[in-house]
Length: 64
Image (cartoon, rainbow, N blue to C red; front, top):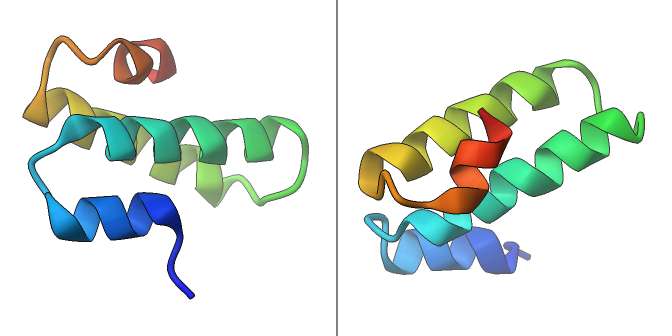
C-alpha cells in the first residue's frame, strides 16, 4: 500500500507540498531514532525537490 504522500506525488509530481511533508516525516523519524541516517539525507533531497517546484514552500525551507 502506498502512502498518501506517495499517491499525491504520483498524481501531481509538480506539486511541492507532498515532497515537503514527506521530508518532514522522514526528518522526524530520524530524530526520533526510528530510521537510519540515510533517512535524513532522503529528507533533505525531498525538501530540495519541493523547493525546486515551489520556492515559497515554507515546510521545505524549514527542512533545509
